[in-house]
Length: 240
Image 1 (cartoon, rainbow, N blue to C red):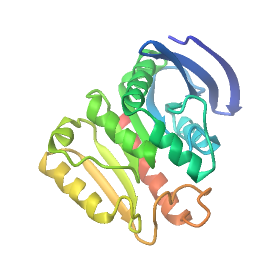
Image 2: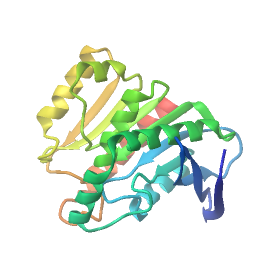
Image 3: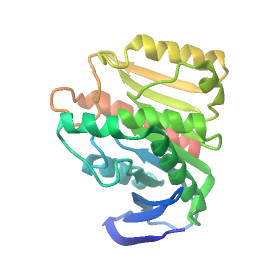
Image 4: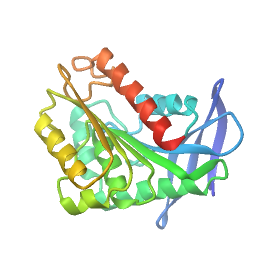
């Protein structure tokens, strides 16, 4: 149920609005993109980087909306966003882990409650910090139908991996010092051993956050295009 929000036409094929929904005893907000067509749509919980819910993340949600998904970009920082790395570090460290998970579950259930969403076809996608939280939502929400993680932290606990029901797509950089190729390989092996569906790719010459053009030194356009194409194909296979 929408507790508040305003609707505006963003592009020819999608509508955007700020929506409000309950997370526990609180009311939180998110940026919702819905396709212009009628009927029930597959949906995605879209999870921001450590910068917060900024314009780039909203653009990704709109691009997903143009692909036919209802895309809800969550606001884990409750209205705060920054382009300063030191501030982003503080925001990420100050984010209560249990509250973030509760907000993500709330976003999932909000989407599932919408009459224009197919509640059996809801996935998640995130980048950097949001990629790690996309994985965590897959661990904690058994009804999640797809999970995309872009250079986000990966689970290592076998119990966590066993809890994952959704197929997982991962895009990573070979030069990412925070999530090195060995960590990606170990995750892939653990998923395969647990008979889970997983598809990961490591891009040579790319480091962390290679998909975001705001990362001036680290942006890799060719790898970013390929990662996006992989994402579109994966979501079409798992959610449509």
